[in-house]
Image (cartoon, rainbow, N blue to C red; front, side, top):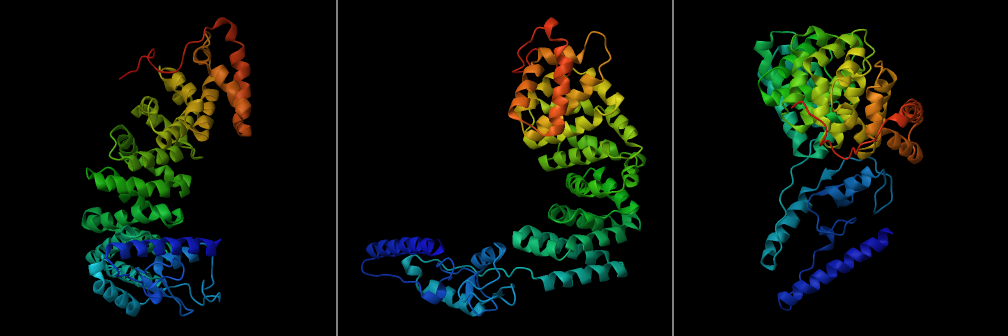
Length: 442
């Protein structure tokens, strides 16, 4: 298969060479064989030499290694080291050849920036730890900025930084500078938080700063007027909250303005990533096994989160829809949350509509919320049961069972059908394609 692919590429190059010859008269430019990558057979742009002594284009050999290969493609020998070494001699020769043939339309390849190595990353780690011990705010701030620049410059550098545990070192630095006054260290903490926001999405959440002082500082950034700081804070919290002990989750109840700041990111969005991250943080808070989870839910209900989520769900895109439904499912696990949902005109129309229109996860949450609302209905007139039937919930749940779903959702759907069936004979269905007959409170 590989030989066949190479032959096709070679045929294409030869065709291009003939076209060049026809345009330039009898002149034909041939790329020297030692300037070609043995894998792609193309002119090398960033030549690197492996431990086998064979030179490849960096992009090609890295793809080969990422595919799980540990042998040299040419010699088939096991590579003693998988770290490519830049071949500056060949690169300069290729650049000189490009310049010499520029009149034939050949452009000079740019000098590639050498990617960060694991040794360089570890050296940065050492410098950060030293700066922390010496209380060197400026030095640590500059090193954090350097890490952020490297991570943003290329995925290769970001992968190297993640693999060497850079997020853990940054978290250590954040915790160290969190021990002193926030006002004194706000600049270095802000820079570290910004770097963590870039790396933590690709790293293990256990590398997050989890001390009480660190959480307090992150919340201070979350409450600030700086939009960038608020975004970075919620992105770090998104990775941090799922691995926190529930006792630390309870801290958000105690820190003034913390829950209001999360709510504000949904009510007045600053970017899609921040809104989604805020929903994920709230989801883990309202579904936490903490004894204080009821108080957490009550606080968000008092802030108006149920109404805000339902309004968002009318036209939210898929990922936000899934997160919003997840939060609503957690909130409806409490009496106060369900009561707020009962009193909102959008609740049943939105939930019934989302059963089939978004994704399997959204369907799972929608059925779960309907189950909680219908099974806990206490009004004599049927309330949500009647409205669910009017919105064609019965038919949609039947289709769901026919199409298939996970066992837990199937069980809930079956129980819902039994309850709804008792009210079907006295209820007329209405079209639930849109929300034109529903009064929205905004």
